[in-house]
Image 1 (cartoon, rainbow, N blue to C red):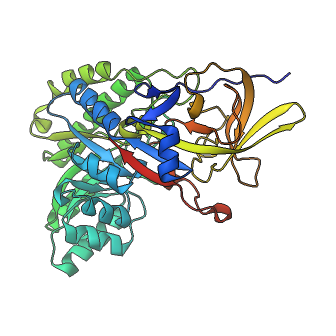
Image 2 (cartoon, rainbow, N blue to C red):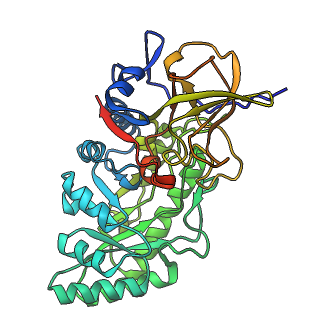
Image 3 (cartoon, rainbow, N blue to C red):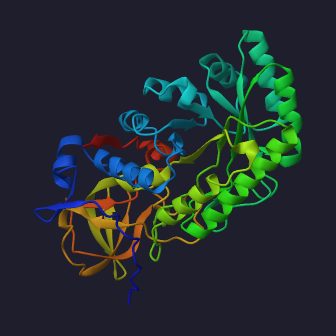
Length: 411
């Protein structure tokens, strides 16, 4: 007997029209007919709703940044530029995409541990903030700025002595390639000030994909305390402090949504009691998947239905080359099922246990494993949810020569 494995929770906000999943008022079958399969569909209405919800929960004085590595699709990025207070990038390529999407240079910050000289030069000439990750990178940025006759705008990315408990990826709390250890920060700030650079402040990122409000509250409090300690040791107030992000979304069975009202209330109280050294500092958080993850769906058509030793497989024209994370091959230790559905029978009750697999010649290409689904056949459409972040550009689209999926932004 095949044991059924649960799927993750489908995000709220999706419609049903004539029994089908609908996004932006259009049925999945119509979207696939018009734009092909496989297809990523992103909902502008859901992006707007998430930002409205977040603004209401967070302190009014807090800036909200979009970490565009989550999803750099140009129409979506252009939409996000109009909603947020800043764009966080991680490469020269993302810098060009951000500028092309209309982001103002003074609202762009650049993090990443391996910035090449050409990327530093491009960033300095554009006038964006560079989050410096090491003393060596600091020296290179200063040298490039001097050679170009430009004043670099530099923040220090700090490797904190704590991490975000329960986070999917820990970005601090030990030996890390990201940021400078605490004892290196003050000397680096002194060097860049002596060289005539513009010091923009700190970037302190402890972890990502946390669903515990208490863990995020604790980390934000530790981050504010660390920023105050560092500023005091330097003897100067930072203009800006990026508190990082870490807000997660439910992907798997049993996951519960993050209580952002609780996080926002606690952060409001902390910002109301800042020490004098931080009284003029502008604070921000940077979020990627939390802003866009639940607003995206990956649609893929079933091309074959087959039986193998008592198991049913629905074979699709998509797969891990577009949705690597859903297949469990993006850092997941134990494979669990993403939210998934038969889009063309979205309101039907499950009546069979099936595995949804992709078209690649590898056993790793599983989009859903022994999941309860309504009966489906060739021509039906599968929907994989939470596909708005780390999907298209975080997957090996050219594996086996398959190529990229289509992408669209709907109202």
